Image 1 (cartoon, helix red, strand yellow):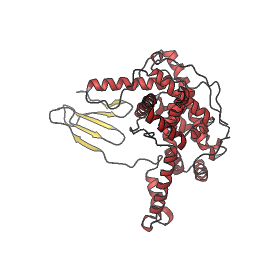
Image 2 (cartoon, chains in turn cyan, red):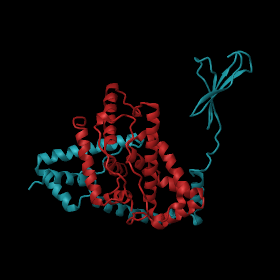
Image 3 (cartoon, rainbow over the protein chains, first blue to last red):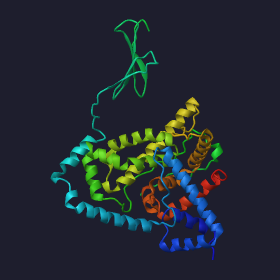
Image 4 (cartoon, one colour):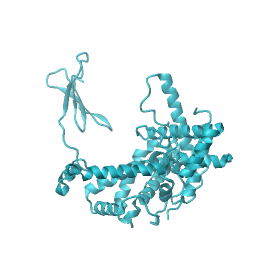
Length: 178
Length: 223
């Protein structure tokens, strides 16, 4: 017997969310195999979920990925897969060659270097000659915290230096010939 | 128990949503510590919070790293505005740092963080509405980050993307929050219910209604 519209809507929603019990998944599988209308509704709902997920992930700058409710996968299946993966990871970790050094020194050092609050390590400025077809400016200095555009003046030793950062651009030195 | 105040929000048709509108839930989320168990290592969280409270930068660093992604999703879930997420996330972590001492039970960290994020998002939206009311500014959703090579395809894709995001934005917040958390974080009904203070059945009902509303709003736009 086919379920009512509301019941089917709820069943499809549960399945897309990976919340179906094995019995519910089996019931839905039967419906999909035998009822074209159910199949169309299921695929439309799944498609809408996928495009909405992709749009939201894109809006938050996250890479796109496949839907997590493809086929008749359920949270029960994923739980079993996770358990298997955890067991495998434990076996790998227990191998002598994979054990961390006593005291966890390497881990602590790595954490300190990658700390969110730690100051960024200093890196040297990059000095790039500008293309020959572009007369001025002749040089651009790109630093870790600022970009400078240096335009040589008409007199030797005189420059227009423009400091650029992410927030603002301002001229820090202007000579008369500019 | 986490509870809503004035949770009902009327839905607006997509076409009527001003691009700059920000539709958060109207009331703050009040965290008072009572929740069922959470699927995290409670002792590890307790140690992490204790160290962060003592000012250990590495602990604070881990706290941010482990929770930053879903906190951003939570902000988006509350506001429906992806372009506000970065700014509000900064405010959230500033508040977390200021108020970490008020976290009574570190095992409830996730619910506490959600309440902080939600309240910060609501405050930011209210401030933005006040600002817009005084200035009368208009804006648009941010442009697509990576347009396709084919201009017509890019335009069509952009239009669809905007329609989808507008539809999510147009959802009443009580439906948008579980919908976004489910789709961006893959949280189960139980996990969503824990941070929102709802039963899994209520979460399920709201997800069904969210999908129904989105289907109606996007009818004819998604093949």
